[in-house]
Image (tube, rainbow, N blue to C red; front, side, top):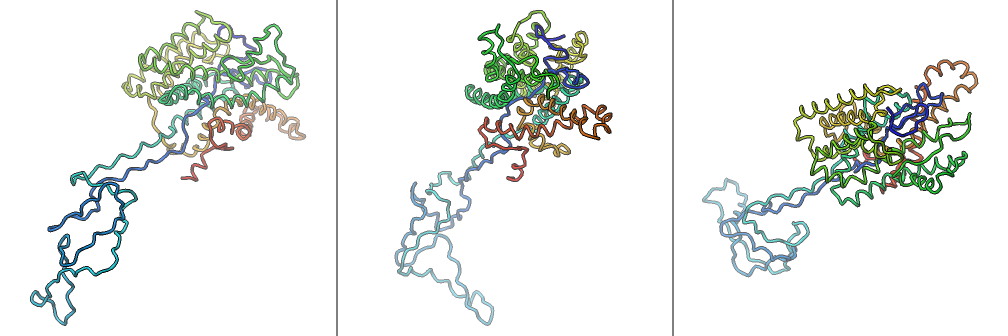
Length: 531
C-alpha cells in the first residue's frame, strides 16, 4: 500500500524505496524513507572540574603545653605580616624547648655529665624578618570550625560526553540507508528500520537540550540543520534550471512559494519529474532522486518545532503522548481519512515516526529504566508482531518494504527502537573490536547531514563511473561480463570515495553552522592527539 494521494513514478516510493539495484538502468528511482538526524548535541572533548581547597587544620602544628596557636590574623590581613618583636629578657617558647646538643667528649654522655639546657638566648638587635609565604595567595581566614576538619567541596560536575552506543547506531543507520538505496532489498526495512532509529536518537538529544530555554534550543537546531541544506540546494537547484526547468504557469505565485522550501522546508520542495536529455550523464529522473532526501529534513524540522509542547505533554501524560502518533497513523495512514497535498505528506511522516521521537524523550528521562525489562521487551515484541501481521495483509509490489506500509512501519519501528534503548549500555568509548571502527563512527556522526543529503546524488555518480568502465579500451571488452555480474558491488565500492570527496567539499558547512572551527576530516584523530 502506498502513501495516500501521493503520485508515484514507476518504482518510486516515499520511504526507503529501492534505489538502483536490478532496475537502476531501467530508470527505476528509489524511495527516500531513510536519513539521519542533522544535528548532534554536544562534542567529543569533555571538561575536567577543579575541586576547591579544603578548609581544615591539616598542616597546622599541634598545640603544645605552655603555648598555643598564635592568635589568628584578622580577616583581610596580608599573609606576609611581619613577626612580632620579642622584648628583652627570657621568654617562653610556645612548646618545649629542645635540649642543647652535648659537647663531643671522649666518653659517653650520662645524666650526671650532660649539660643543663640553657634557656633560649635573648634576641639580638637587627632587622625584623617577615614570615615566609607558605600559604596559597589570598587573605588569611580565621578558623571557625572549632577544630573539626572541614569536608572538601565537591568538584563541579563534568560536562556529559557523547554516548558511543548511540553514535554507533547512527552510523549503522547511515550505512543501511546507502545499501538499501543501492540494492533495494525490502527485507532491510525489517532487519534495521533506520528511520525509526534515527528519529528516536534525535528525540533523546532534543529532550536533553530542552533543559535550556526552548527558544534558544530551537534556534540552535535550525542553525545546525539549515546551512548544510542550503549548500545542497545551491548546487542542485541551479542545475535544474540550467537543464530547462521552468515555473509551472498554472500554479502562479504558489510555485515560487513552494520553491522557498529549499530554504525553509516546512513543505515538500518542487522539482521536475524529468530533467536533462536521454543519454546524458545522469538519468532523466535524477532531480527526483536528488531532492528525495529532503523529506527527512522537513520531518525533522516539524519535530523540532513541536518538541517543547510534545515534551510538556509527555511529562504530564507519558503513555498517551507516546501512543497518540500510532493512533493518528491508523487513521490517516490506512486510508480511513485522506489529507491531500503537501500538508498530508508532512502530517503522515509526523505520525509514522512521532512515537519513535517521543520514545527518545522516554529514554532521556529514564522512564524505560523504571519499567521491568521483561515487561518492556515483551510489550515491544507484541507491538512489533502487530506490525508484521499488518504488513502481511497489505504487501505492495515491493513486498515487505515497510516504508510503503505506514502503520506497519510505525509499530515495527517503535517496538524495535524500544528494545534497542531498553538494553542500551552507556559507552564512553567503543568496546573490544568495535574500537577499531571508532574513527569512522566519529566521522559519520560529525558529517551525518552531509552524508545523508548527498548520498543519492553520489550513488548516481558512482553508477555512471562504473558504466564508463565499458568504454575503457581493452578493459571493457575483456572484463565486460564481470562488470555486468558485479555491477551493484562496484557501485557500492565507488560510493565511499565519492562520499569522502563530498565530506571534504561540503562537510565543513556543518562546523560553521555549529559555530565550530571548520574541519576537513573530523574523525576524532585530533582529539586523540590532545589526549
